Image 1 (cartoon, rainbow, N blue to C red):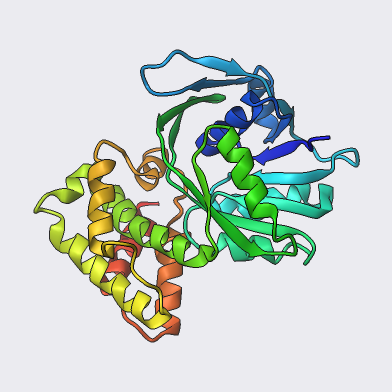
Image 2 (image 1 turned 60 degrees about the vertical axis):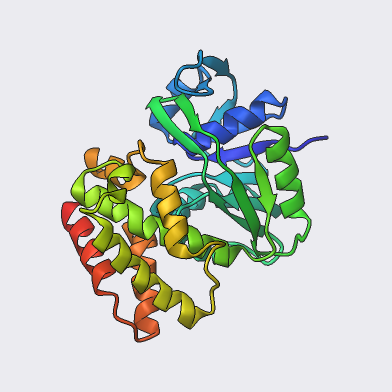
Length: 303
């Protein structure tokens, strides 16, 4: 019998993955805050594109852990800084051989969650480029199709990645396995460490970073990243890091970065798991990253 899939977190990615998986006939349970349970008990409203009609998808909702809940398959879709605290509430419900898939931005939260698990519990990490946003609680818009690159971070189950790729692909979410997930996450972190802080500090959409006003800062941030990549032995993405960052800026020109949205809403950003992680690694390598440090300081001040 197909095991139930649990999704921890009711943000845009959590609702997107939960609703897509539920539409394939899988039993999906959202693990949410008590304040969200009533609204989400009425189902998730999913719009496949900003001009599409909304469709309601029903999922189960739990806000309190109990002895009857056994979680074998879990997606963690919280913000990076919330992952360990959110999982801690449900940790006792994890099966001995549980598979956990993390969708978090940046680096740092994966190691924090891995430290909470046993060697028999398998942790997968993903780099996600799906575009989604919440219209309101329980209502998500799939604004842009992307890809989920996933690989094993830790744990015993070497077939878990293939099973998750299959589940997501059947659900209509492009998914691909990678043998080494850490370099992939570093590439995503590098892109985010340029685009997110700059757009957040200057209150601009991503596309503005292609203008001559911001090019010197983009170039400086990229050069500093390449110093870290070289020392860590991480290869640049295909075509080069600078070219990849430029492509993302152009392809997401109309987007407001998640970091800018967090500042707009008065929320804590993920800067500690993006630029913060980069700076910690640079310090351990005895590298100075003055432009990234300035970005970090400015975002922390804005928070």
